[in-house]
Image (cartoon, helix red, strand yellow):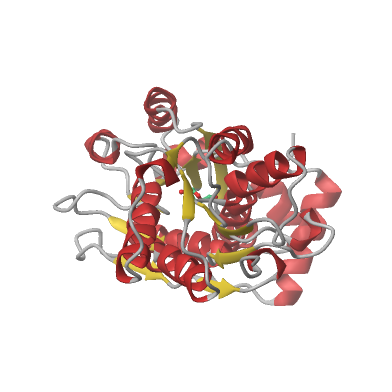
Length: 336
Ligand code: RIB
């Protein structure tokens, strides 16, 4: 098997230059880079990552622990993470917890044994416990998407969930809707709670009664969105507006309305948190509060890499990104 010395000899450079080119760290001219890459290809050289990590005590591997990568929001976050990590010479391990604290703890224990260099965490619920577990191994961690309880010091990147929800519900109110239901995510998850708070603030400021039956709780998935929507459709009279607390709930709600023969927005207006990639819909349809998902992944990874390479004792940062209100067909006006 070819070694780094064989590659260096073939390319006419030192072994450290070969290492710099392969790890994309330090300077190497384009001509040198091309010579080394040609030698690697000709010799079929495969870097021995284990040997390198034993020397450097770095595995050049990060982990992104999130709840559901099949959700287009998290898919886009993961892309922002991987692009940023790869540019810095790191690979990324992805883990799905499905909002389960047990799954989260299981994955964190495996990742820490694998000695990943840093962890990006979308906490299912018990963020402080998970952060303690990671910190006990002196591994840098950044929290994405969700808030951590006050007093917990950790770098965080998330969005303006309360304001984004407030703006969506405010839009429906300004279009004339008075009875608006929320299909909420699970309590105990900060994004669900913040979006519910935005809904309640918009309804309160408009003087609309807070009807308990217009607030239903479920999970951040399509099946739960459809189930919550069916509950709402049994109400008499039905509300004229729906706020879906995330993209998958919104899609599930749409399926339930189609099952019931209802048209959107003619029979019922719908707004949803999170945008959906246009490729997923025949035409962009939902009025949404769009989160900058790619930028969230990018900024969180930049924070983590700064922790890895810079001053680990610097004060923690909380980066809150704005959502964008995108008005489309689904938010129409109430009939009559
Ligand atoms: O659709 C994903 C979004 O909804 C994320 O903010 C996640 O926290 C869920 O609430």
